Length: 416
Ligand code: HGY
Ligand code: MN
Ligand code: MN
Image: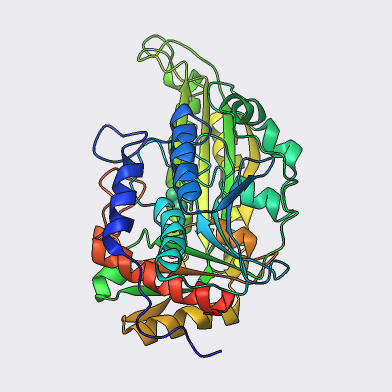
């Protein structure tokens, strides 16, 4: 079948209005969002999305991880559906577009097909994956990881947040624990639209990122144990300072990442010190190392060097350590056919585009294991994300959604 043709474009005003409407749920304190997974705000955002799906004539199913699947029928109900989506949960100081653009961009495709009375052979399913962020319950991409068979549902249900709340109980509490078996759904393909969350597209003045790969990631939760003691009367040589240990590991992570430039990255974003009193030497610290690289061997080498470095630091400070890997996926190569559909769509629509490697993790990284998958990216202002000041333009959102639209309907096969 020939490509859908020049005239297919989404309705940018409707997409933008929906983004702004969703952004009202779980507002942050600085203009962004705090709609963390399985909170009441997440539940409210889910209900709004469901109402919109109902209004668009979609039938919504929910699986046992709470992932939402809103289905637009195809002319061949037995044909494998084309899935399109992302996540509605946000960071605690998140932006309005991270994830949300991908879910509402998928909904906008369906709304536009309804407006034009266009049918597709394959059904189209708009998806909201539970707990992509991993901020409240580690690891990130939890529901898509269970769907892809990489993580078990029992493991996912057992995850705890800082307050000791348990994932499975919170999912039931907000009323979004569905009855579908996770991973039972089969897909012809999965497409995800996402903001770049980095500076490349904006710096180069390019409209569309054709995501060919996703970098690999490791999250190490480190627990250091020293001894609480008086900050004034304890002689320096007698201290077992877990706070100093954490500081040295934070520096180590940075130095190791700097040894593998220009691609590797590393930081410690989550840090807790106990008892966190200004005149007590920290007896315990808990923190998460986040290291990433597009190259598996590099990621493994960074992991090893950091583990060895932690041991050396702790020996010198007479403190003990525990390291638990709480997140991991290898670098991802997306499906060539799906990537080509995205590249061809950008060309057909006259948008500037370039290949790009995703720096952030996405549900698409896991779904790529069970279905042909690819991603579209649009720029974001100053490449900023995971910050309430995250911003995009309506034009960027529309360009990304237009390309997503063409890739999805071409794969779903328009039948008039
Ligand atoms: O951490 C990530 O890359 C994603 O934003 N969850
Ligand atoms: Mn995201
Ligand atoms: Mn994110």
